[in-house]
Length: 261
Image 1 (tube, helix red, strand yellow):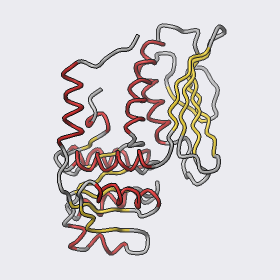
Image 2: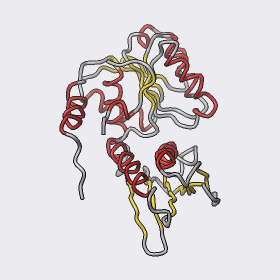
Image 3: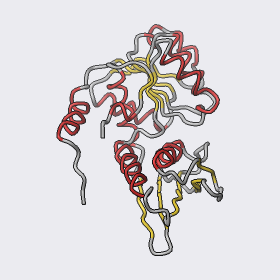
């Protein structure tokens, strides 16, 4: 049976998507494939790119052009992301970031900066609207499956061969959503099979943008849900939507703040 959102919640999501548009000055930190796609989408939505920072022009963080940005959109690497946040905040610029792999080392510092020191970071392991919907379905399914202990759950994430971290940040976020509602799982583990552990397997293949598959298996049957990205465009659009949202909000922000499912 399909579960429809409450009317007021549906209205809120609609307003969030449609009405936080405005002409913004954006900076890009990281100018790979994702950065270039974000640039195209941002310009198509009426925004101005005032600064582009990549590995060879780090002094641009000190420029007047960068400081004029309303929001910086950051897609770099696990070992450079946190330093990029600090440089952007020093210039008084809010940050939207899709970089993963930094949270274990710097998560506490970022939370303090955003909750006590007045900084703003919108962070998501995946900005795709489809993944946001998938994540909500994932949590709801875990809540249901908590009643049925004969089902064991596992996850497989598949990405392109250039991906630097494993498991993916999206897989970790999905796993944490399952653990929140499934009492028989208390942590996730990469390639790990043990009682109480949600096993995640990673596959690196060609140029796959991202596939996340979650399975509940029992002796009688298997229930599987999956999200398969066709390309990077959905991630880039979501990052621009997040920047538009961040322009009007403050603190430590997530997809859950933007979309009230």
